[in-house]
Structures are given as structure tokens and as C-alpha cells.
Image (cartoon, rainbow, N blue to C red; front, side, top):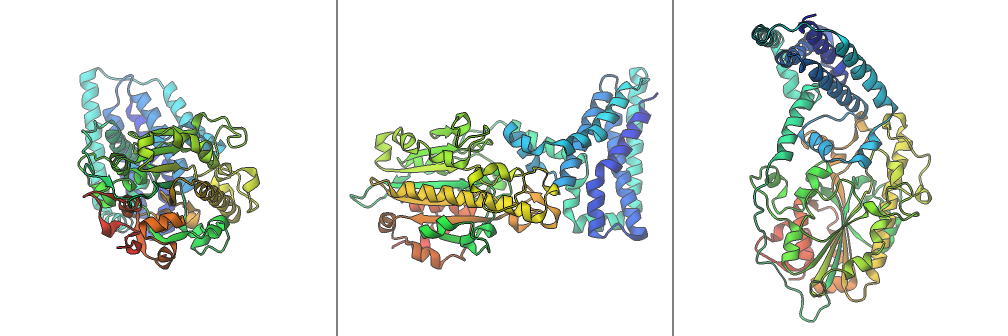
Length: 535
């Protein structure tokens, strides 16, 4: 059989059944009804099939075509499964998340539904195509056939676009997220963009805050700031932010201040964490043409002791590369790490000794310790909380979130928030027992989460398209009386500003302000606490 036939069959298979998420979205949007809707769907399927046919035709060589077919079928099945199940879309950010994930994170997303999809959508057709004997012509004739077939496919695609130009143009202009559902072309493009970024040779880091110094009051004790980097926190599910459930009783008893109108830099850890520790802000970060040092570098350059404690398999995304770091991955605590993955309370274990190991001359100027949580990372929310902290029942125990009803899914997520509240309460208690320091705590989540609203789950959607629940994050502050005294920032003043809008753009400057670090890169208008600072 000539390669033309399996190429055509695979292209049609992927363009039709492989794009069920796209057809579902067109149906939900109400643009696929009537004669115009059928024209739109038919033309779109035809254009996708022609594009795939052109790509595969250029790869129709002996020893190349069958592996290429297998890879594309696999990508189509995997992308289709996750887009159909969680209503995510696939763009460069999502591809970066995939490239930067590890086994512990990935295993939560595996399960029988994925295996079934792979078996029917990829392995079976790939096996049939693999067994099919193909008749390749001598290379000059085969090259002519390949190029000719690709050109014909391009002409047919152009004709389909012209025939359905008005509904195609209107739909794609008004519903821009549809382009991220075109399977597997979305995966090919996103993967190429992400891989280019991953393999890009970084230039030399541009120094930042070379003039940084600590301007603490004369004779004062050193400051100790615990910066808790939350994971997947929804601001609206924190009791102290007005949530109907009391998910944060320990924070409420501690008398913390909260910014209820806080917004993230991105919708994933890979996008948000480097951005929120940068001085550039979200717009500057996304349009940057170089690499800069970050907040931790400036703090360290000012002479402060800096420590990063990580309970997140994905790591610090390069932010902590130049400061002392402790990772909990090797911990074997039977109570806190019962199934090989540690709960976030592990971050407080041995914290005294970790800080004591930092240089004494730096500790004398002040300490900033960053705790990077596992937090509320999905989809296996139930695994983020110990058995004794599952207050809300029944709890969704499945990582295949559509299997759970809305209430059990909400319960599982709220249990993670309640456990985060407990960890933060314990952290505040620990800070209160540090007589040698003026102590404070700042908790900010990296991004939010979708819990099935509009059938969207998890996070990582393109920022412009993502729902607010993926971008609206909690920002919580606790200051000891001594910390209030040294800075003039009072919790009562902060509580009066609870509805002020803050973003991750403020974090860099807010931490510098709290630690009284003076440098030309500090911008008072971007310090969330500047309005409460004593002149």
C-alpha cells in the first residue's frame, strides 16, 4: 500500500475523533448549529485534516513515517484526554508545565481513563499502521510524491478556508481559546515554543540591587520574616476573606491581616514563581529580553541570611539557585511523610537547626526564610492533607475529578485550605517563640484553581482566558508587636486596607520594605505596606 492511504486515514482519525474537545466546545458555544454551523465544523475538520496530511506527507519516508504516525497519534490521545477531562487548553505555558513536572506530580494525573483513551485512540491504530506493509518509491519519485501531496493538501485547506471564511473568521476572532483546542497541532506548536525556551542558553544574569543595605533602627534586634509561598490557593475559599466556611480558624485567632483583592502573575507555578520574585512585574517579565537576579539575590546582597525550604516536587523554578536550599524530598518521617510525599508541616521540622546553620554575621542583620508549600496542588487534593485534618466530608478521593460530585470535590479542596491554615498557625506559633528576632509572616499563593466551574478543572489556562478563580489569590500578613514597632506597620492599619488591590507585582518591593532594605530598585508605589509605614 502506498503511504498516501495510512497518512489520509490517520489525518482523518485525528481531525475528527481526536478533536472531540473542540467539537464539544463549538457545541457549547452554540456556533455549530444550523447550516452555517455545519459548514464551520466541516471546514474546520477539513483544514485540520489537511494540515496533518501535509505534515505527514513530508515525513512519508521509509523508517520515518510509522514512528511519526505513532507519535502524533499518542500526542492526540493524551492531549484529547486531558482537554476533554479537565477542560484545559494546551499552549506554551501548559507545555512548559509538562516539561518541568516530575513523577510525583505526574502520577496524580494517570489512571484507567487515560489508559483506555491511549489504548483506543493511539495504541490500537498505531499497531494496525505499524503492521501494514508500505510500498515506498525510489527516493526521487517519493520526494516528488511527498511534496506534491503536501501542496495539494495546502490548496484544499485554502479552498475550505475561503468557502467558510466568514463563520471561521468570526468564531476564531470571538473565541480565541479555540486555537488552543486544535489537536494535535496545538501540542506540536506549544511543545516547539516551550522546548525552544527550555533549551535557550541563558545569558549572563544582570546584577540587581548592587547598592542594597539594611537600614534597621539603631540597636534593634534583627528581623525574621517567614515568606510562605502557597500553592494553588483560592482567595475565595479562605474563611478570613469572607468564605462561608470557617476554613481558617487559626489565622483568625492569630489576628492576621489579609488583602482580599490580590491577583497572581500567572496561572501556573512555572509562570508565577519566577515572575513574582522578579522586579519586572507581570508585563515586564513576559516581555523581557534578558535574565536578571531576583528578590532573594537582593536580600542576600544586603547582607541578610536567606534560606529556601521546598516541599514542592517542581522546585523553585530557578529562584533559589543562589541561596541555601533545603528540600524535603529525602525526608522519611513516618508521621509527616506516610506515603513517600510529605505534608507541609514537614517544613517546620528542624527549622531552628536549618536557620542556625546560616552564617552568624548574616543572621545578625536579619533572616528571610521561604517555605514553598505543596499546598492545595491537584488533582489529588485528598493526598495533601493528613487523615486527622479532613474536616469536610464526604471527600473526593479520586484524581479523575469529573468522577466526583461538586460537593465532595469542594470538601477535598477546602480540607487542603484548612490544613494550610493549621501549618500557618503553627508557623506563627514558632515565630512567637523566637526571642532573638522581631518576627513577621507573609503568605502569598502562586495561583488559584478551577474546581469544575463551567466544567473547568485545575489551572494553567492562558492568562487572558483564565477564569478569575485561577488568578485571585490569598495574601496574608502577621506581624509581631516588635515587628510593628520597628517598621511602624500595624496590623490594624493593614486590616483597614483589606480591599486594596495588590498583585504579585507588589511582592518584590513589599518584602524589601518589610525587611527595611534600601536600594534604588525599590519602588514605594509597589510596596503593599507603604501606606501603613511610619514616615
